[in-house]
Image (tube, rainbow, N blue to C red; front, side):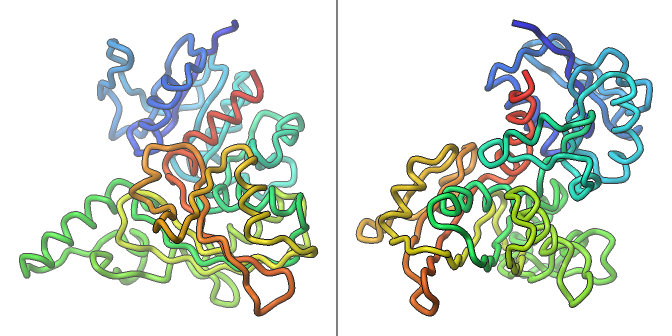
Length: 339
């Protein structure tokens, strides 16, 4: 088997660290590692398989000899360095939103549109975390009965906002319980003009507001779902909410189908679908929760039931580890398609 030189851009972040772990778990054929980050993290040491590697500042010339470059360092860095990596012969799998809606860049979830990778021109976009888990569950239902409309409300963990937000949730929780003053810096996002408490609270605001008062996160769900599933006119609406959970995104999804599909038929369809696990037994109080899905790469679906307010309606509850399947694992699966 061929082996490949791999670069990780943003290696000191939560997703960057997950890349290292999951590449080893999945036995990706790594020949050499290039660990890249900002100048602040340069010269740090990271141990991989018993050997210490030095983190280097990400520069255009960092990608010489690299076969695959996994980016998770934000859109500005991707726009600046991903084309430079491609010029030097690397295939880029990018986790930011920089290229997702570019018609020349495939946006890929392997369980849904694996064939799209064949059209890449050096860059492949990894979708938003909340989009990935939703389309993995929607695609089998669409193939079985046809999607007519999708309504989703997300319950997104703070790990989606980065390690600083995870630390802030922990610190705020202790502060609330000990009746101390709260520090609020990272929710809804660091550059926001006003910050909110996340401990013991929910914030219906992820990323900046766009037209019609939808957030960028909500519009990502709408636009990316249509592109990945090849349904440019699919009616989709979304409300995204940050919740006081450390890791794992949950979604309440309502679908209206073109043709009848019972909850039991939906369970059977989903149970056979790649990357999906059905946990749905109300009599045993069985349904997926973030604490059960952490560290897993599958998308978990439960609470499947009729929506009798519309013809052919179903409700679903979808949960996944947003750092793994929502980011690092999906990116690595994309690279695996190419090798």
